[in-house]
Image (tube, rainbow, N blue to C red; front, side, top):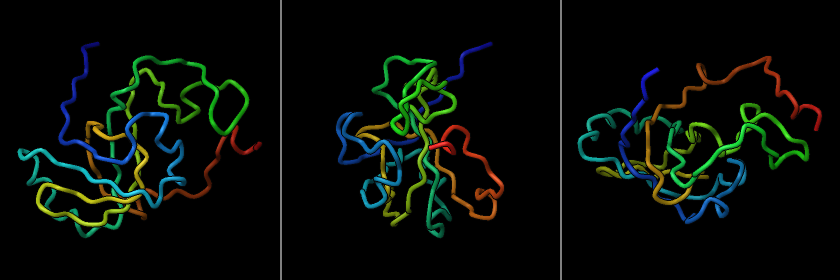
Length: 146
């Protein structure tokens, strides 16, 4: 298979400078403010985004240098397969967060609920749509037993 190459569309700015300083769970970051600087060639893509209360942010976890297929999650004492966790130490260090969209001014998107580190490369933004993104009758695997 050929390599997959993505190019950042912006940079995420947060108060967190190193991976260990960022909250491990989005629920612990709900009041943390940050901003996204969109590169000028992608500004037209922000049209109509401001009407949404939340956005899905896809980003590259640029400070992660290795991965492990078996990890010990923060919420557990057992070793789990990385794909059953939200560990950042993944074969492809792609992260996602759902943040509150506070506002957009020029090339800056102001958000609340950040759990990524300062300088994180932005891969994509999608609107959060409750009718499409909320699921019922879901299972939570090993977390159910906690």
